Length: 295
Image (cartoon, rainbow, N blue to C red; front, top):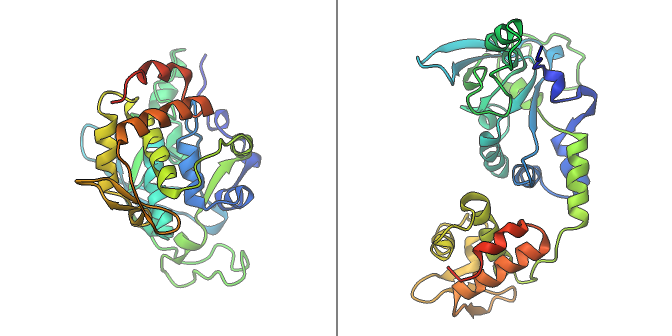
């Protein structure tokens, strides 16, 4: 008989704060999530804790994988799984300094109470494989968070100095909501960090490496890499756009010393970067078949 249980995925004693893990790696929390979701061969899991000791965490939610729009109140107490598709949203929100309600508004998660679904219970009774697998986007226990109920009072006023939810507000959602990572996953990233390949010292060249790597992860370097990279250069995030002076008619970058650098042939530059990424082990060797010609 097959059994799908929360303990299959996590050891509660092995979970640590995402913030602490990021500090160990000497990076920001949003950068850690970026590494987690881009980990090869598969993303690492992100967890979210709604500590039971602080009272009941109640939210109005939409049941995602239902044919009919269904809105219900859900108790989020315990450990929730953040689906891989939602990790980028969390990353971007952390990057802009969001926390609490702003961090999780309309986020899709699978709370602990919804992980063990009725479909799985029935399947086990029939001695069949459970249909709801945690990593699958069609998990019937997935919810989308819509509204958040304020805590009427603290379950224990001495839980934490300065923590006061005696007046009904949403401060606890910011103060006590915790993002978690498994310690074994942190160890994976620490090993990866030890063998991180050298990247160019020029920031604009590192940017090109990142864009070409992202294209492999999203498009498998299918035909048109050059066009997609060029388009990405036109719509960079604010923290990177200063590196590109112009895209058309000439592609001009800003060097570390502020001087201009014209890139005469983007396509040959991409071809070179592809080979370096494969050599560095950041892209599998099978990708060599796709880099015979610049595209």
